[in-house]
Amino acid sequence: MNNPKKFSQELHDLCDIPSRQAVIDYAKKHWMVEARPNPDKYAVDLIVFNQGTRSGYIEVELRDWRKKDETECPYPTIHVPYRKQKLFDNGFPTIYFIVHFDKKWGYWLDVEDIMKHPIKEIPNNSVPEGEKFYDVPTKKWNFVTLNV
Image (tube, rainbow, N blue to C red; front, side):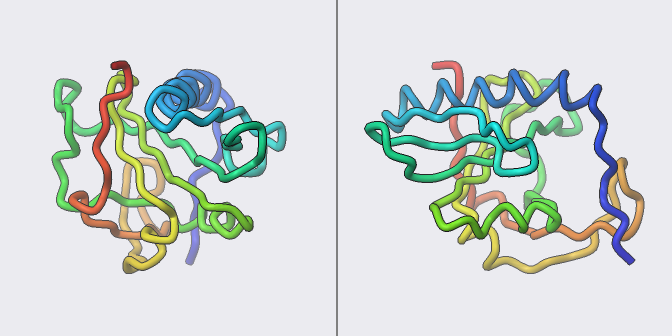
């Protein structure tokens, strides 16, 4: 049974634009590349350009851990929705970027590394049963400060 999370325009508008902007700013400052919003709303969130040439993609997700004041992920693993896998095979290197709700810090990992980890059905607040996730150890992710 696969019961994927339903799309919410309200959550999208509240979360996606500021989260993507935090990653766009980070990519420019720390990786010296330009990340632009993808005009295809069904594709990977950001297209990465290096010296004007498309060089990759970044998928962005906003997360809220159990306590608002926690900086780093308090869990031993980070779950990446398996339904996102359709965005991973696109002919370019792709990064999965998790942004904390305050847009001050995040984690990123290459999707090739994510896909090496087990897929598990994990109940959650949005979908209590049926949704599958890549179960990736938190220590595998790159922790970064976004607003510096």
